[in-house]
Amino acid sequence: MGIRLAFALLIGAVAVLAVTGWHALFVAAEAAAAALIGVRAVTVPRNRRVWALAAVGIGQWVAGGIALDLGWDAVAGVLFAGMFACEFLGLSLFLHGRIRPFPVWLAVDGVLAAFTLAALGALAYGPLRGATHSEPHIVAGLLANIVCDLVLLALVLVGFAATSWRPGRAWLFAGIGLVVTSTGDMLVVFGETTGPLVQVLWATALIFIALASWQPTPTPTATRVGWSTAALPLGAGAVAIAVALYCGIASGEPVAAFMAAGALLAALARAVLMLRENLGLLHSARREALTDKLTGLPNRRALLLQLDRAIAGQRPHTLAFFDLDGFKAYNDDFGHAAGDALLQRLAPRLAMVGGRAFRLGGDEFCLLLPHALGDDAPRVARAVAALGERGEGFQITASHGLVLIPEEAGRVEDALRLADERMYARKRHRRAGQAEQARAVLVALLDERGEDEARAAALAGEFGRRLGLADPAADVSAAYVAG
Image 1 (cartoon, helix red, strand yellow):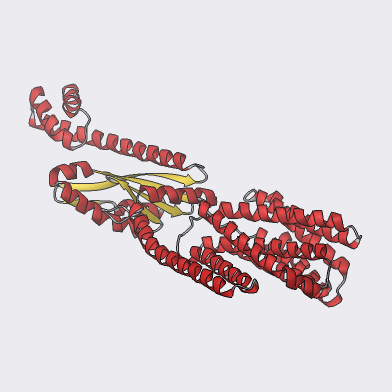
Image 2 (cartoon, rainbow, N blue to C red):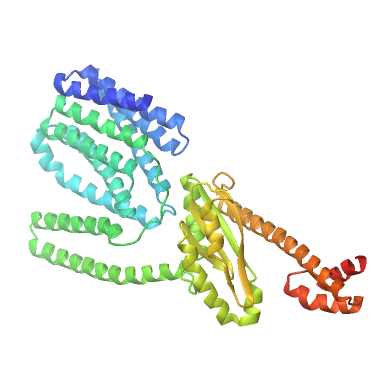
């Protein structure tokens, strides 16, 4: 409630700034935005380093603006450079936590975008100097400011592309804030003004960044290789070709420039065709690698990926392990083909329960459910029922074990081990109960028929093994003699 009130007051202050143009109000709004981000970094552990860097960076921006007002241009330059470094590092850490695992080629895309933007900046030096009528060192400083803005925007674009243009509200708000900041910087460079309009833009940008810091942190996701991730390098390559073509024409060798640009465009088109073919192969291979061929359910490898994301997301999940009881006897009695057919019937039933179902191999299944659930939860009961089947001469049931994530297990290995232990503990307890019942029935039956001890042992060996007794002959015989 207090944070919402603080944001409401901050937005109101910016509205007043738009009307009055009070510079002191602008400085106060900047400081308030930095403070809100700092409070987020202190009070919420998740992504603490990211927002601590953002708060420090914006604090340097505020201090740099004050230094400019006092005429300390050199100090302001150092503070603004520190602000850029903090923002770049913070965004990089945020992106690294958002994409898991983080591919190296994504970093290469960022380098490609940075070089392309640097080429555009170098190309803009002459027109910029003519537009501002300033000294070279002043133009270089203004140009460096623009390039820094563009580098941050390139990093934001990498985040959008890596998440198939669905980065989450935090990254979206941060991106909007950087776009608004860059717009204000452009007005300063070409309009040579830091009036109320620019101040309102900068203050609005800081509100968006502060809002980004208080958004829920999305669950880390793997990069989906596709046209969305290819858009950035392909676009940067096309811009680089245009820059090379322009420079070639300006140097007085237009024919050579056109030929070189044509060759580069052909190479780019070839890369696009290869990318299209490889993407098809990659998606097909990925589906096969993460899918159980027999049942069509996601396999153990897919479960490991989903568990890693669930644990990293710090949101409650329930991991349920299932092992079929009676499946080995079913295979022995009816054959492996019938066993495979049984698994194919049970798999879609489990998938219909909800959450995400997996087959780990053999007769082991798994269910990853949102929220924290107990053994008596209706969804767990439905899952157990879905893995059961009864027919003439057989009965298949399921034992299960539950683990709450991340409450009971903070690592994938711990979650798998604990679920497995609980499942087999339940299975042993269940078998012990069944064995006790079977023993009592056999003893009563043999006693009623008046069988001698040797005959009792033979009958126990035949029937007890079918009922799951570890040593049925000795167990039942001892009970029969004792009785």
